[in-house]
Amino acid sequence: MVESSDGEFAPVRQLSSREVYRNPWLALREDRIERQDGSRGIYSVIERPDYAVVIPAEDDGFHLVTQYRYPIAGSFWEFPQGCFPDWRPVDPIELARTELAEETGFRAGSLVDLGRLFSWHGASGQAFTVVLATDLTPGSPDREIGEQDMRQQWFSRRQFERLIHDGEIRDNSTLSAYAMLLLHERG
Image 1 (cartoon, rainbow, N blue to C red):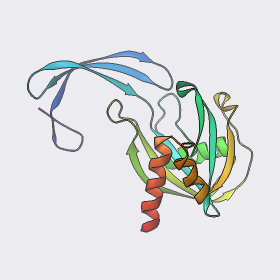
Image 2 (image 1 turned 180 degrees about the vertical axis):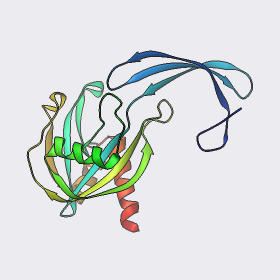
Image 3 (image 1 turned 90 degrees about the horizontal axis):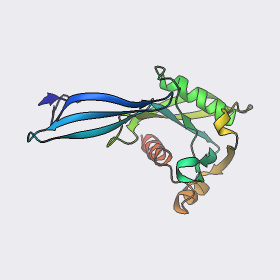
Image 4 (image 1 turned 180 degrees about the horizontal axis):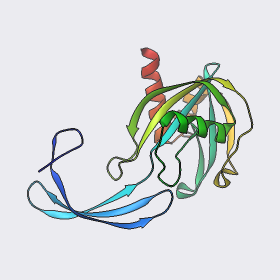
């Protein structure tokens, strides 16, 4: 057995690895593995750059964005979020500042790291950092070409929770970020 990242012994050992595909935003690799009982198999791993999810909080509410998401053929409200392309090393606070300005135009006087989570740990090691942005100053967004249909709107906390209830927020990163905020507020 092999030691895992948390110091425990991993019940799966990598025998070989090959990259199947790569672009500036995603890579797919196929690993040949051996399990604890000696059986062998293949594990497909999707690699993506880490990202930030920004909670722009103001007046007991939040600024959300929505845009068409091709894989799900729909648009839902979410907190601003994103990653740097080309696998650039990430400072989560710098990334949060950049994404907030790009998608909403806001500049934050305060950015607080609320924690780090994995987004799809059964298939990817990609993680995201939840950042609370307050003391907001408005400005003009500078969206990427793929965000040209993006819209932004402020919602009260009550409206935000209603959007969750009504299925208009379905993004797991947004829901996880909100849970992190609630824990942060409890102290």
